[in-house]
Image (cartoon, rainbow, N blue to C red; front, top):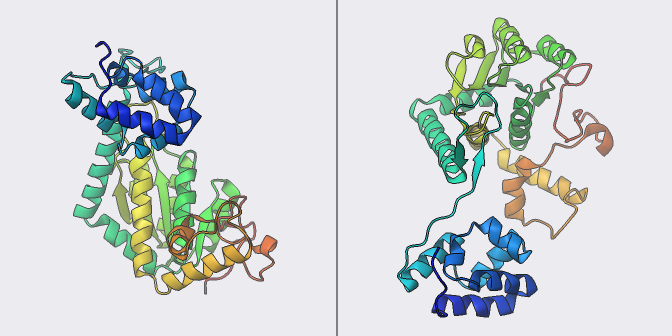
Length: 340
């Protein structure tokens, strides 16, 4: 660690910004000023705990001082002082008893791995045309079914929410035997099923994909390998890199691939923009946004896809779809309504 230096222009700039931003920012400045610039070798989390401040307080202080981040602040301080400041990083130890050796992993390395997953996955899916073909199948389908079991249930909900913002006849199949049977019973050869299947592979997901395939319907599989069990029944495979520094598979590229798939389908969906505007009007009229200022029309058009579909019974709209507690259209006990 290096010793404290005389006040510098950057430190004085932080002092003036802290005076404008309030008590929390002033406490942050005092922590930064103590031992500056060596104080910048501490992790941001350590600075926040020492100042009893929040990340929003730190962002506000840096913004008021015209600095983008603590990394930029460290570069400025190093340039002014002529010292080389160590770059702080959060390190953690795996608690998995099967992890040998039990080495400490750096947070920055974990972030780099996630960025690599995202970059490789999207580049590969663009290069092999898988996303384009899968989006075309979604557009041409009579009805669209989405299924994910275990951790993948979250991915299925996200994709269903995005798809319902731009097209109709989208159904989230709940990961239960009854809902799966309803979906298979009502499926049509012109339908498409989108499944998420990752280690450890859900038997229910593979079985439903097999039944849709036997019916002649298209199956789009987002999975971690071309050798995963569901690929035997998939018409289109979107291979996603899920390697992770943690014991769990990485969700980063999975969520991104699903989002891009929905965006490509929406780009070709007839009336998608009109449907988005209509949904935004309905959510606003039902006071669904609730807190804060009403979103701008641009925000609604771009973000309404993340809002849940309208609950049929609660809204009192005849013929509306059933929904789960999150508002997504799901397969009801009696099966979905006929395709229009």
